[in-house]
Length: 152
Image 1: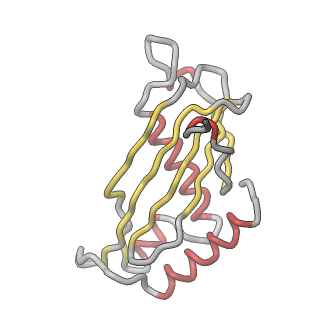
Image 2 (image 1 turned 90 degrees about the vertical axis):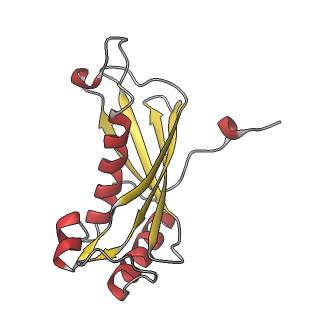
């Protein structure tokens, strides 16, 4: 019987992040809060590849805040190791972006799975229900890119 742990690796944009000693807690493993930074790093690298950064969003009159973050830890990352972070955008059907993540160690072991949700609000802080054309194009470019089997 195969379960969640038997799934093949997530396909999407991938980034290798070295584990720094300063990220570890007294137990000798990466402190759980740093995993959120790894997720942000791979997500930002993915979107900035297409010219979309938080500063660019503001310049266009949008804010794209995280409204939900869920991390399911499976194994610890350790100092001097490597975290291979993968992010995959789900096709958006509203003005909301959901990204799936997978964090694996240097030998491929599953460290964590995660998911973030971001909404789009305008400069006045009003929640948008449909994606503006510029963000719709961005999502289409990202979806095509990640389906081509890239790494960053």
